[in-house]
Image 1 (cartoon, rainbow, N blue to C red):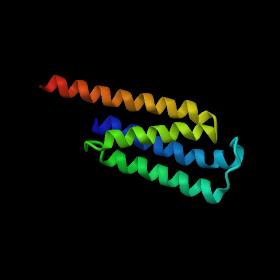
Image 2: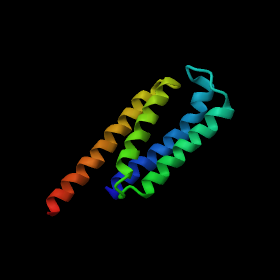
Image 3: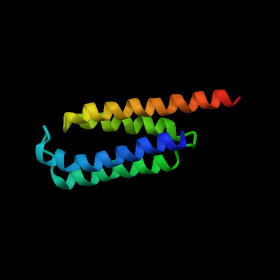
Length: 106
């Protein structure tokens, strides 16, 4: 879980940062840069922090909340529905593989 889950969240943080200009320029809702930049950066930083502590018990539920927030950014830039959905599936895969590895170790 540590490597795969952390990688998923770290890559997702990069995508969130790259989506900030898209939301500002071509988003379906007019979002001023003074709002989009801080909100996007906070979301990206949260993803990086959870990626760092992904082995802690609280990290999985917090990771799901962050996945939901990224998917919800699709209301601002519709391609984020797809991108967020892909990352949510990768997050699920990371959790499942970690559970199977833990079950196999016992």
